[in-house]
Each structure stands twice: as structure tokens, then as C-alpha cells.
Image 1 (cartoon, rainbow, N blue to C red):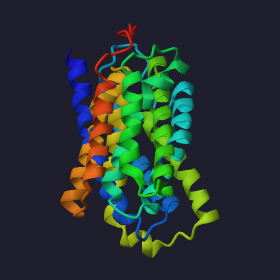
Image 2 (tube, helix red, strand yellow):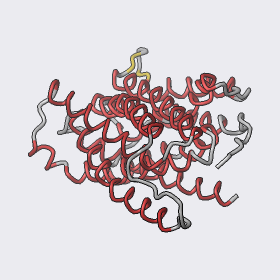
Image 3 (cartoon, one colour):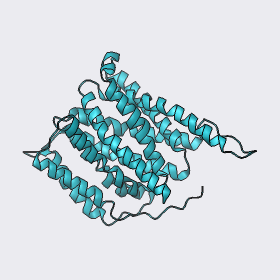
Image 4 (cartoon, rainbow, N blue to C red):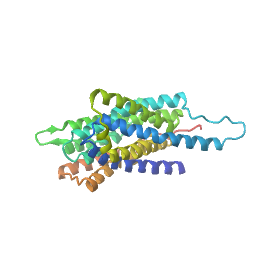
Amino acid sequence: MQKKLRANLMLLLGALIWGSTFVAQTTASDTVEPFTFLFSRSFIGFLFLIPVIVFFNFQSNKKLADGEKPKTLMPSKLTTIAGVSCGLILTLASYCQQKGITLMTDNASGKAGFITALYIVFTPIFGVFLKRRIPQIIVVCVPIATLGFYLLCIKSGFTIEFGDIVTLFGAFFFTFHILIIDYFMEKGANPIKTSCIQFLIVGIISLILALLFEKPDLSIIWNAKLEIMYAGFLSSGIAYTLQIIAQKDADPTSATLIMSLESVFAALSGWLVLGESLSNKELVGCLLVFIAVILAQVQLPFPKKKRTD
């Protein structure tokens, strides 16, 4: 019970950080191109986690009994594969999210938060690839979420912004990110080292693509330093690490119940900081998406995992 409570608190804090980070992403999108923003925040997250790994490794070695082999700082083969795999899919997810925000014309922070929240509905559906049973409630959730997305994004004349579509693709990629994390944590990968490696991978890939397709400028990056540092230290360094640690003691569907509050925090942050507002139609769309998100968690479809460690 204590492990579950601790995991829930970690996920709640992560959701709060992610939701408020949409404000930083929105304001930074005015001047910083997506790959440039992504490699900047990812390298900060990577560097932030190095001393964290050193600290936990030191604490772990202090508790070793006489004769036990001390743990090294280097990741195991499994953890390395986990970090690289998570990094590849997180690059796609984060780019689609940031690019989608850049392309949105209004209420980008709140809208992107609710569109991204659709991964909560997608997670149990795509969980079949991990031989998970799909709960019957999903049959209800999918049409509700689809209607909500329609009201939130479809304009008069049945038009939809390209940024909405790109952000929706990001939600799909975040779904697979959650499932990949669950797979490797179940296998025994180290959560903090996995997170550190994934941000190194995201940073390297994003830097290469930024140099190829964008024009990274140090002065522009410096002008957006507050947004980048917020996203780097809090969202990348802390929130994603909390997610990976917490998912070690929770199945992907139950974990996403609390993570779904990210969309609420995103809308509230956009309203408080950026003065964003939503029309009545868009508010109904947000409400329907959130209802679908909550309903998706009503029945926990997966049995409790038996741990051997």
C-alpha cells in the first residue's frame, strides 16, 4: 500500500509539472524552433540526472552487506536498451507535441494539454501488443473522446488545424512511450538510468535534426532560457523520472488515471499565466475528453503483477 501511495503522489506531481510546462512550451514556441527547444531541454534533463544517479548509487552501496559486490554507475545492457528505446519514441512524441503547439493559432497551451490527454484512452487499446486485456469500458470511452476531440478542434465548415493533427500524433507516440516503459520496468531496468539515457538520446537526435533543418541560435536560446530551464529541469529531469519510477509499481492503465490530470493543469496554467480562454464548444470538448480519460480508468483491466525482486 505504501508503494502504491508513493507512486500515486509521484505521478500527481509529474502531472502538475507537465501541465504547467505547456505554458513554457507555448511561450517558447514564438521564438524557438521545435528541435532546438527539444535538444536544449533534453540535455538539461540529462545533465540534471547524472548527479542524481551518483547519489543513489552511493546510497545503495552504503547499504551493501560485507562481501557484496558494489553497484557501478554504468547502466546494464537491459537499462541501456530501455533508455535508447524510450529515447527514440520520446523524440517523436515530444517533437509532435512541440510542433503542434507552434502551429496552433489560439489557446495552444490548454488545447494541446487536452489533445495529448487522449493517450490515456489509447494506452489500454494498444496494450494488446503486450498481451493486455482491453476493458469493456473502452468501448464507451473511444466515441466520447472522439466527440470531445471534434468539438475541441474542428472549426466551422468542418476544418481542423494542422497543429491539432500533429499534436494528436504526439498522443499516439506518448502511448507507446508508456507501454515501452512498462515493458522494461517489468523486466528490471533501472528507472533513473533509463530516464537519463533517454534524454541523452533525445538530445543527440534533436541536435542533429536542428542543425539539418533549423537554424539554432544561441541568442534565441538564451532569450528563452527560463522556459527551456523549466522544461529541462522540471519536466524532463524530474517529471519523466517520477513517471518511470512510479510505473515500476503500477500497470500502465492505472498509472494514467493520475497522469490524465496533466490536461487540467495545462488548461488552468494557460488561463492563469497566458490569459487563454476557451469557447463554450471547446469547453464541452475538453469536458468530454476528460470524462473519457476518467472512464478509461474505472475498471482496472490488468491483474496485479507478481514481483520477484
